[in-house]
Each structure stands twice: as structure tokens, then as C-alpha cells.
Amino acid sequence: MAAESGENKNSFNRYACLCAIIASIISIIFGYDTGVMSGAMIFIKEDLKISDVQVEILAGILNICALVGSLAAGRTSDYIGRRYTIVLASIIFLIGAVLMGYAPNYAILMTGRCTAGVGVGFALMIAPVYSAEISSPSTRGFLTSLPELCISFGILLGYTSNYLFGKLTLRLGWRMMLGVAAVPSLALAFGILKMPESPRWLVLEGRLKEAKKILLLISNSEEEAESRFRDIKIAAGIDPDCVEEVVKPPNIHHGQGVWKDLFIRPTPAVRRILIAAIGIHFFEHATGIEAVVLYSPRIFHKAGVTSKNKLLLATVGVGLTKTTFILIATVFLDKVGRRRLLLTSTAGLVVSLSGLGFALTMVELNPGERLVWALCLSIIFTYLYVAFFSIGLGPITWVYSSEIFPLRLRAQGASIGVAVNRLMNAIVSMSFISIYKAITIGGAFFMFAGVSLVAWWFFFFLLPETKGKSLEEIEILFTKNTRHENQGLEIQPTTSNSV
Image 1 (cartoon, rainbow, N blue to C red):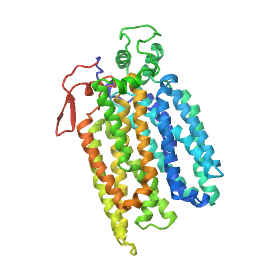
Image 2: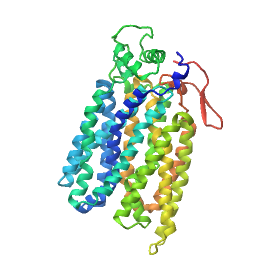
Image 3: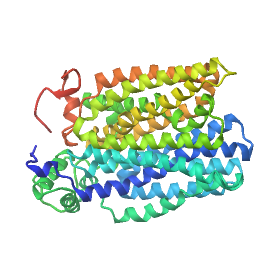
Image 4: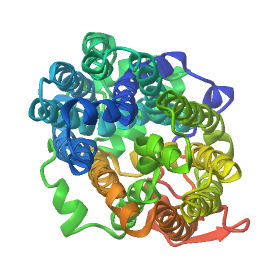
């Protein structure tokens, strides 16, 4: 494989960064929708007179619909391209936000929430894939983690919106919280049209001249662009020395046969990749992040915070912590590596969830008393949990799963990971209230701590390091037997040959 040499390899391409930022705006809208619902549910329950079960369904239905959207997004992006898939997601979001902002009753509100959920599925699949496909190996961790950073920023905006719009009348406040998301959705639908298409998708379509032109824009030198162009052509099954402007590549498929290659007759490497992608998406939500992000007002209320304004203000702290530590993670992903951050993050989850479970259990064992120390510990461990999640497991899930699949399988492979992610999100968000009523809220967080421990072992044994590898090189990590070195923090292939 052609080598990228000199300082150009490690330089930062501003145009690629700008493209990734614009594509990631859709993640801000999704994050806003998630964050704003945590506070809006307090007012919706009071205004529409709905039960706890209806609240759980309202919270979780978005993720059920996102599961459908994510599975459709893989095939859609193979047909119409990555860029127009982002446009489609923005339009779906716009319709959902308008319906929720208008909602005169629970049925219309659910319709809007379901519509927005389909948009979420599209957004979660396409933003990391697009960012991964336009970035170089030296900056891919940073650029591919931008969607998760934007989700966290959106959650923070949603919490802030709760606090500000919560001062309006009951009937108007929550509708403004939900409906205002239509504005950035409309802006993004037009703004994304100024962005280039993914060069890797263009190569799959046989549009080599267009792909080469874009690679020259997102690379730091003509030599780097040529090296990346050759690697992509090889991965797509095209002769690397081909100089035609438009060809019909042998592997053009629009998604046909991909499901067989993933599930029915996968190679050993693809099987390991699929297990890694499904596993990391499963554990991202099985460790309880949605319970904290979506139900943080209830957690703080259980801990002893009774004022509605103070509940929403404490929740803003959750969003601020999440955004700050994901921002830190984006800086270290390409320096420290995915694996080291992931293992450190997951170990921190075990400790912080155990501490939160202990503090909330103490509060429940003393129902008539106001335990200030337990209240303080609950808030501290909640923020610690969010910090540890955000510096590792949160952003790395999307970075890792979007970069490990081979080119032909990437869009639909990533969509499978997103579908698992949304399914777990839905299970946690729709069952958390019932779980903590059955085993106490402290017991629920002890349960999440146990799942986090299992997650650490899964990551330690099954996820090799991908830092600094090109997308076309990564499959080799899963092709050959790997061995642990440096106390398990690095995994290296047994051979240096590449595809």
C-alpha cells in the first residue's frame, strides 16, 4: 500500500474538518431532541394528564422508530449517496419537530416523536460514516467523533431550553421546547447541498474523476490524494492504475448481497468485525447512559432535590459535563488511541455507577430524613459517570463502528450497529422506571455497574487498536490472529502486509 510520508500525513485538513462539522449538525438536532424531552416530560405529563407508562412509551418510541430508520439508511445511502441521505434525515426531522410543537394531544405528539425517530436512525448512521470516509487516518478519530460531540452539545442545548422555556405557561412551554428544533433542520437541509459527496461512495459508483477531485480537496497534498485514491480503488475492486473518468466497477451493488456477506457467509474477519460493532453498540446503552440523560430529573428528585427549577438546573450540569468531556476525548482519540480510552472509560463507569447505586440506596433506606451527604454523593457520582462515559465509550462507539467495516459493507454494516444501539436505547428508556420500581433505583444502578464490568472484558479481548490505520488497512487487524502487547493496551497484526 502506498505510503503517506512527511508532515503532510499528520497535517490537519481544514476543508475535511468543515465538511465533518456541517454533517455533524444533524447530530446536534438529535441531541437536542433527546435532552429536551427529559425536562419536557415533566410538563407534558402535567398538561396532557398521561400515566408513567405513557411517559415511558413516549421516551422510548423514538428509538424503536430510529431502529427502522437506521436499517433503511444503509441501503438508502448506497443508492442516493451519503450527502443526500443527510438531506433526507433533515427533512424527516423537520416534519417530526413541527408535529411535536403543534401536538394538541398525545396521539399527535407520538406521531411527531415517531417521525423524528426515523430521522434519528438516518442521522446516527450517516454522520459518522460520512465523516470517516472523508477523513485521513491521522485525523479520523477527531472528525468521526464530532457527531457524538454534537449530540452532547445538542443535549446541553435541550437541557438549557427546558430551563428557559419552562418559565412559560404550561401549555406553551413544552411545545416551544420541542418545536424549535425545526429551525436548524431546515437550515441543514439546504446547507448540506454545498458539501461534497463521499469520494469512497463515488468510487463505488464508478465516478472516478469526481472522486479524485474531492480527494484533492480533502487531502494535504497531491501525493496523499493519489495514495488514498489507489487504496480506495483496490478496496472497490477497480484496477488501481485505471485512468478512466467513469467505469463500471465489478463490485457495484447498491447494497445487493451485503446481508449475505454479513450474516450468511461472512469471512472470519467480517464475523469478528460484526461482533465488535454489535458489541460496542450494545454496551454503550446497556451501561445505562440513557437512564441518566433522559431521567436525570427523576434521579435528582429521588436523591432529594425537590424544586422544579433546581431539578432542571442540575440537569443542565449533566449536559455541560457530557459536552466538556467529549470535547476532551476528541483531542486525545488520535493521540492516545481508541482502546486505551475505551478501557479507562469503562473502568470509570463501574466505579461511578457503584457509587451512585450506594448513595441512592442510602437515601431510600432513610425515607424520612434529608441526607445531604447522600444527595451530594448522588450528584457527584452522576457527573462522574457522565464524564467517564463521555471521554471514552460515548464517542468511541461511533468512531470505531464506522471505521472497521470494509468499504463494500460499511454503510449497511454501520446501520446494523446503529439498529442495535437504538434497540438498547429503547429498552433502557422504556423500562427504567419499571426496573427501579421493581429493584429500587439504587439497585438499578448496581445492575448497570455489573453490565459495565462485562463490557470491560469484552472490549479488552475483542477490540484491537485502529489508531493511525487507513480505512483500507483496518480489515487486516481482524483478518489475522492478534496478540496483546504492552499490558493489553495495543493489538498488532502478525503480518505487516496490507490489502
